[in-house]
Image (cartoon, rainbow, N blue to C red):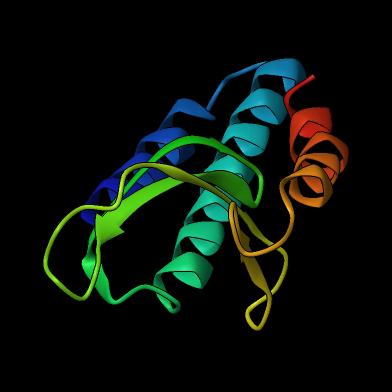
Amino acid sequence: MKKIILLAFVVGLVGCGKSEAEKAKAKAEMTEIKVNRLGRERVQQFLKDADSAKFRNEVAYCGEVNAKNGFGAFTGFKKYIAASEQLVIMDGDIPAAQFNELWQKHCISYAK
């Protein structure tokens, strides 16, 4: 949280005297940070040990998470789609073909 606040402060200071393109880029970066954070928060609600969660390859509300299970062991990185607060789909929750179709449609398209 401190990093996000610090980053917002730095971006605010950096925005002084910058071109419109640079301001737009900084705003897009801040939006991406906020969306990724929201996705992480959504996923953490469904984990046994939310504090152990490690995230990578985040794009919008999608990414990969590794967290401890009920036995205290890490499960390995699994892809997720955090569609809403009530709907988080993890790889393995639905048939692989269906998950991959959703992943291609909603996650890969944002990275382009």
